[in-house]
Length: 319
Ligand code: R5P
Image (cartoon, rainbow, N blue to C red; front, side, top):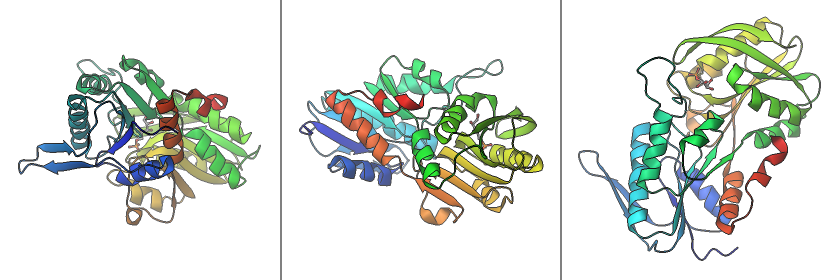
């Protein structure tokens, strides 16, 4: 690959993922100083020339969300002022994506606001993974390459012989049906859907389960596990309806507040499979968690974008 003008920078949200991506690309992360002034302002200094470069910044806007968003905007500004040729923001996890519509009057659409901020700061393109809703792509007026984690998760489950007609992929809500369908297709398995209502953010109640789950291995699939409330509630509902085994898979392990404890102590859940879009030191997680790496997928997407090759070939068969 012609790497002469390819540069990868990393914000502070997920340096291990950025390192793994760079290893795959055969590159070093570009040198940059990231500090804080004593009042907390972010101070960025890129330590090598970016003139005419095709730069990729890797930053998940995970917790502390606002710190990571601001850091990303400031890195973009520094790159733009350093005469970079093109700047792609690689967001393995897009924080604020859940605020993608007005559910009630006088609410913001923060996912759109973040998109505007990124564009204004100098992003020329976005590379994202499992956005909470596909239509967030349309919040940007710059190209968005949207990757899916389900092929990676599907390969892992197949490698463990979890497939076939005794397996049911379960969507914990109506919004996740497409994601569950794609995984069910990969596993040649059935599909079930949980109908839930959400009385307030971070709280949900199961109303009913549509589909056959009795005696089956259920794979509950979601894009995000935040406090774990939705998924533990969904697993409980499946167990009460006769599921034999319940595994949970999610691309983004936000895992805030009581999540790890909740999931670890749930008697209904056998295993939780997440990816490394959000960094959690191994010691924070228990043996019940399995983390798959998205570094190969993102590294290959970066290579293709840099060389002007098709990115959709990475996931087309799974749509
Ligand atoms: C919401 O629509 C998302 O897909 C997740 O289901 C939600 O963010 C999970 O949140 P929590 O883990 O706090 O229930």
